Length: 414
Image (cartoon, rainbow, N blue to C red):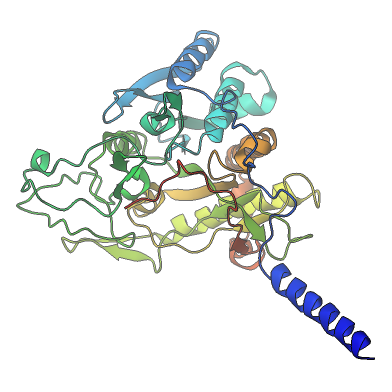
């Protein structure tokens, strides 16, 4: 009898332990992560040299549709920041600005941009011709070439930040002036997180006489100290886009409320601020226009509806990105300047996870999502979408799937 009771207790204990384990996101058997015994393969992703060659080749075969320009150069290594232009600013056309690879270890959607650029430049498809007729499109496929081309032990090993040393004297500040909060190092190489360096004052210049630079936080605007952020800001000012789409990747999260509660393939964001206004350090207040916020939600909602209309397809498990408050992001600064925004945040945050394993599907999903938005503007369908779908239908994303196999070269940022 005692043996039977002991066995029952053991079984109950195992069941309780099992329920506790299952209450947290799992990565068993292999999860979304590159395993320790696997070799990371980066050959499918573009180097900056390969990207430049590919873009110029597409331009040469575009019959005048595409113009490729070097819009600026990276901070330290001097790599070109390419922009692919389909048309010039025209107040009679919708203007769309697409950007990718702001973080150097989020490489996949440089490939997505190249695929879209090639289609727009060379296809004779009716939808493509309508898009080009009604929309001016500018695309920056790799904003952070320094991060993309970062090396460890003589091999390319991309990192999040650009490569740039904080130089307060360049801005007229004291040599010991503290760096912004988004400055740090990875593997001993210093740089800035570009997606905190933007400012809703598009003409902002760091100046000790008029601007105070505390270390700051994500709830405050950045200081435009990186040439990469200044390049994008200059393009934004030139185009004055109606819509800005920023392509990112992150560690996987669970999709709560979808058909199988599996991992997200895509999360979207249309609301960048808590509240509808932001007041900067100089007392200037910037407000998100209600129609801009409405269109932002309509774009994300249209993509969600179109990608999920076939049920549990490979493009399913789409969620709403968790609320943020980043006026120093490109999305935040540009939405505060009258442009509707959409964040595409795909599963696969870095070279350590499912960005490796599922890259083909994620690239195809990204290109399709961009096509949906472009065609939504062509047909006018995007304006007919109920913006409440964004808040009430797109499910919020669940908990983060932690990486059980951290790479020793992924050093913590000080």
